[in-house]
Each structure stands twice: as structure tokens, then as C-alpha cells.
Amino acid sequence: MHVFDRKAELIDHLNMERDKNHEIGLVPTMGALHKGHLSLVKKAISENDVVVVSVFVNPTQFDQKEDLEKYPRTFERDVELLKQLDDTIVVFAPDAKDIYGEEVIAKEYNFEGLDKVMEGAFRTGHFDGVGTIVELFLTTVSPSRAYFGEKDFQQLQIIRKLVETQNLPFEIVGCPIEREPHGLAMSSRNERLSETTRKEAGFIYKTLKTANEKFGTESASEIKKWVKSQFEKNELLDLEYFEITDENTLTPMLKKQANQKYRAFIAVYAENVRLIDNLRLN
Ligand code: PAF
Image 1 (tube, rainbow, N blue to C red):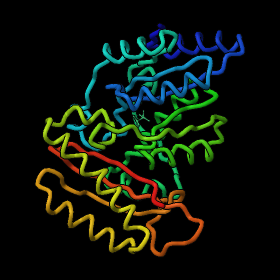
Image 2: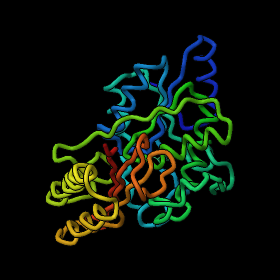
Image 3: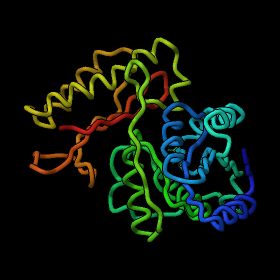
Image 4: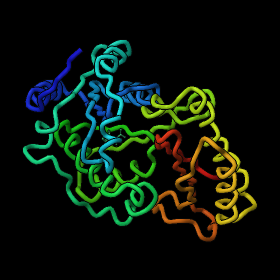
């Protein structure tokens, strides 16, 4: 198992792999790995000769200091999990200055409006931070493919826009959401929930599934109203937003059009932990 904390050493190692015509897959993470991450890593292993997993809690994508400080950090355990999966995985865990240079700040991007709604509207500067670090990892690793989970579907669409607008020659692969037994989308943040709330948070997915059933006969505004009323009755979960949008442009659906793909997005607070989820509607 190779664990690098310096960019220059990682690049030397990957150049040797490329000399052997090995294709490289990249799975960017912020650590605190769970089954959701491992499913991305498994997919990357099945499609590449070498897999790099980056573990880096990116400061520029947090809009709240407390959220950054409380983000779970479990590096030893992460390395152990990856080793058990496949001990040829390459782990890259740089410090902020090594990957960013002297100034740990986000670039400003034009994501053509994808970043102005939902997560972007509630977390100022978040997607500039994500874009900056993902671009840095992509250009450092130069992978054939990079893997991202659909739990952060808005992030996935923004990263697709990033590679398109910056002309980056890397394939972006989206991977399905992994769920806990009660339906809660897997996330490193789930670790911060009490057992009762973690179970109750299955309500988020249950509501998305019912919204999907209603989608056949009800308008977006009727469904939004219904979702809001469900959360008003729930004492443990606070709804931040629920939106139904076009899957590609992420603009709110006004009137359903044939041949368009729609998705429901939700953000909820539980015990001060922010949870997000989404579901393709059909
Ligand atoms: O999805 C995440 O964990 C992060 O946003 C990412 C893509 C690793 C960038 O820090």
C-alpha cells in the first residue's frame, strides 16, 4: 500500500505507472470513509489498473468554521479499510499548502448557474471551493477517470461543467447512492447523529419516495407543500429545502415536459448536522 503526503512523490509514482501503460482512476474523498466511498473505490478498481484515493478535508468548501472543525477525521481507519479492500490502492493525503500552494483560497468559477441554487444558495462559496480542489486533484493525478457519488448530485453536475469549461481531458463517472438499512443516504456526517435520530433520518428517503409517487399526478408546488407539511410534523428533522429540478440544468421544474429528466433534492438538519439526498423522478 502506498501512502503519499507529498504531491511531488505521488506524481513520480504515477509517472512510473503511466510508463507501464497503466490507466489511473481517482476517487477524491474527505476521508471518514464508509460503504458509499468504498463502492466508488470498487468501481474504480474494476475499470482502472491503478486507483488513487485522495483523503483531504478541503477547508475552502466549508462556509462554517464549526462544520469544518467537526468534520470527522479517521485517517488510520480509512487507510486500514482501503488496505482490506485492495492493498495496491494509492492513498494521497496532502496538507493544504502542498496541494494549494502558499494561498489556501478558492478560485472563482462560472458554473453557468448550476451553483446558484440549492447547496450553492445555502452554502456561500461552497462550489468554488469544491471546484478548486477537484481541479487541483485532477491536474495532479491526471486520471483516465474520476469517480463521484450521486448523493452530491449537484456537485457531480458542477464537476462535469468544470471539466467541460476548463477543457480537462478526464472522464467523470457518477456512482449510485449507497443507503443505510433505514434508507438514510450514506454520509460521513451520519457518524455525528445519535442512534435514534439516525434511524429517524430514514424519513428523508421515505419522503423522497412518496414524492416520486405523487410526481405522476401532482404539480411540483403541490408536492413541495406536502413535503413541507410532513417535516413540520417531525420533531427531530428540520427541512432546509426541497426542490424538484431539471436534472441537467438544475432549474426548478415549473411545468412537466415530456422527455425531460427531473430529480427531487432535499436538505435537512438533524441535531445540527446537515443531511442531503436526492432521487430521480419518473
Ligand atoms: O464529495 C466530497 O467528499 C468532496 O466535496 C470532494 C469531492 C472530495 C472535494 O473535497
